Length: 474
Image 1 (cartoon, helix red, strand yellow):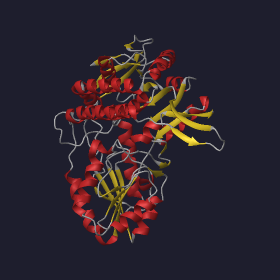
Image 2 (image 1 turned 135 degrees about the horizontal axis):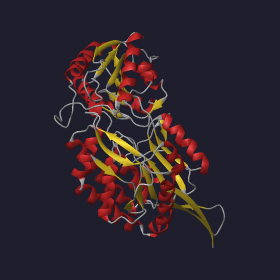
Image 3 (image 1 turned 180 degrees about the horizontal axis):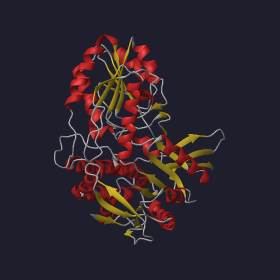
């Protein structure tokens, strides 16, 4: 079992209290590590270290910051196996998947390093003669990054890399479910020679997180998490009128038209729903299928769901892994039971398996209704609700009748249908004839309760900047 200390101002610091956070392997329920829980004083010290470092960091040219990011990316790739081993132990992922997540994190870090020569301002015409308006893009200062458990390595760099290239420094709070991999990332930062204080990583309880996020030096708080967590962050932001950037819940709808390639749609849907046990904010959650092909798609999905096996991916990487913890499994199963009680038909799965591990089978529910909880609330697990529709207007009405608007999917061979849905779907993303994958040169941003701001690409990087207008009379 490993023990980790918090990382502040370029070094791993000694614990300031006896409080520990235990880390469990969700496949076996064994404790695989312990992390020192940061005190409020240590969290404040981390913000102060970041604030001190930010002055020198932002004074570097952007190309110099880009060189630091490229060295960081090289170190992440060099340590991909070590990062992967920590991530696999705490998340239930296979070693290959976990190590590849570290390599993908290195890729997004390199991508943001390329923005070094592309962070631009604007020259705006003035209404006054002999005058120019110059709009500058400037860093915000210290950024608090709150990281989820499901893709904790990739998401950490997804937030840290754009923050750093634009001249900010960061304090990271990883999920208490998956903090071990974050400290392997800290070792990569040391190996890369990232200046002290630029990146700080601490685990903590909610009270200490409040001390971190409400510190006067924190100018932006970025979170990937639930709607409930987003509301908490908005409360934190009130203290300093800090800027929020929130990627929150999702309930990805899939519309399957009568002309769709049903075999491909079924394969894609099953893959999306069972990758990391369905614990993705953009995973397919509800499928609307044209009534003329409903029974065919149902048969394909039923056979595919029944064939999915689950278990410990450390011994068989081909299996579907576990949920994050016992609470998640209990809540998901209760949602399935309530759906059946409300009239949904259980086509596959839907039982609590015996033995250790937070496993839950791939579960398919047909004959669902739009007003059911299983259709309206995020499951964040391997559970799929199936509904039928009459025509595309009916499908759009149901897909848009929702609190969330993160990702959406359409299967059709008709470009007119695709264009209609592209112009009418109430979501930040539409994927046509494929399931979501969040290309990091795009912009991952939710509508409605799915968030404020967003990640990735030019627009995600600009989230970490603020503007200064210079009015120049000459």
